[in-house]
Amino acid sequence: MTEGFKIAGLILAAGFSKRYGSKNKLLKEVDGTSMICRVSQLAERAFLSPRLVVTGYQMEIIEKELLGENIKTIFNKSYSQGMGTSIACGIKLLRSQMIDAVVVLLGDMPNIDPHSIVCLCNAFNPALNHDICVPVRNDKQGNPVLFGRNYFNALLALRGDQGGKEIIRANQDSVVKVNVFDHGIHIDVDREIDVAN
Image 1: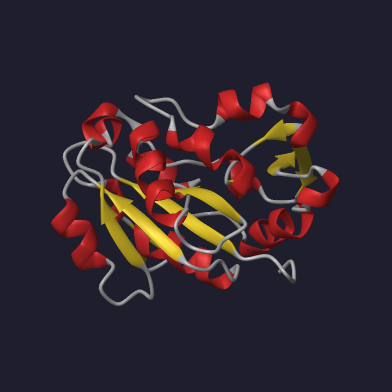
Image 2: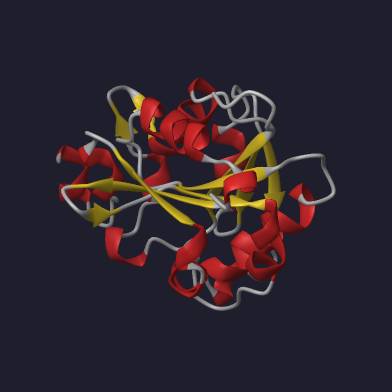
C-alpha cells in the first residue's frame, strides 16, 4: 500500500441487475462467498480504508448480507437513476473524511486480485500528477479505477448511468495506466453464466 496516503474503497451495489434474472446477483455465491461479501473482502485485503458500500435496490437484503463484514453502507435514494448517482452518493459522504483518493469498485466484479488494487494505490502520486490510476491487461483498460481527491467534485457531478469514463477521457494527463496480470479486471457478472468465467 502507498505509505502516506489514505485511500478509501467505494463499492457500488445499488443496481437492479436486470440482465441477471429475478434474483439479486450480488447474493450469488462465488467460491462459497456471496458476490457482495467477496468484493467487500477484496477491498479489505487491499487495505482500503474507510470502506463504503452504496446500496439501493433491495437495500435490506444487501445490508443483511454485509452484517458480518467490516464495512459501512449508505443508501442511495436515487439509485433508480443510474450508477452515476451511486458514485456521487458515496463521494458526498467520503469527501468529508481525511482521504486522498478513492478506489471505485463494482459489486458485480468478484474476481479481481487484491494485489491489482494495491498496485493502483502504489501508482497514485498527486505530486507527479498521477491522480487517476487505471488497471490495464493486454492493452485493455478495466476496473476498478482510483480517483484522487482532485476529482471528487467531478465525481459528485455524475448523473444517470454515467460512470467515471468521461472523467478519465477528459483528463488523460493525469491518468496512469497500471499493467496487471489479472483477468478479473475485465469480468463483470451480468448473467448467471458469467459467474463460472
